[in-house]
Image (cartoon, helix red, strand yellow):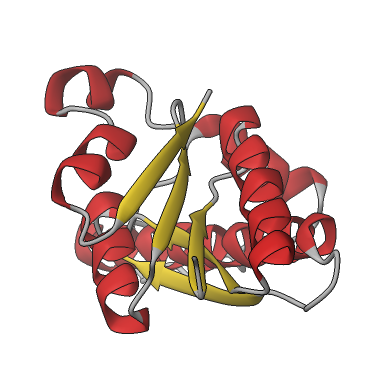
Length: 169
């Protein structure tokens, strides 16, 4: 029934359950399982930032040499902060995907994809690109208050998906 299954993960408990269900279904149907994590450019929650520090996923940013005035220009400072956040977000995303792949590898090794941008849009684009038959997502992720205002990623994905969607609680 299913040949290609895509499961989105953000490390939340519901996305962990979604990955496990997707892996079970992939094994049952002999389907290719792909796991996707989407990094929101320049954004990193305090919880994930702490994880990056504790797990030593990124090096501490080197202190730039200050100009003669003693102040780093704001534009350079903002760029360095953005680069460090992006580097940490990619490192965390890679770790989350590796952990999810480890837990989902009953049978065939799942493929993994690390995307960047709006989570719902990137999950949908990935599903279309892969010709996904089934998309599995968690009902509650790590997006917090933003999702209450804009609609959850899982809701937006289920409304616009080109295939069947299972939302896992």
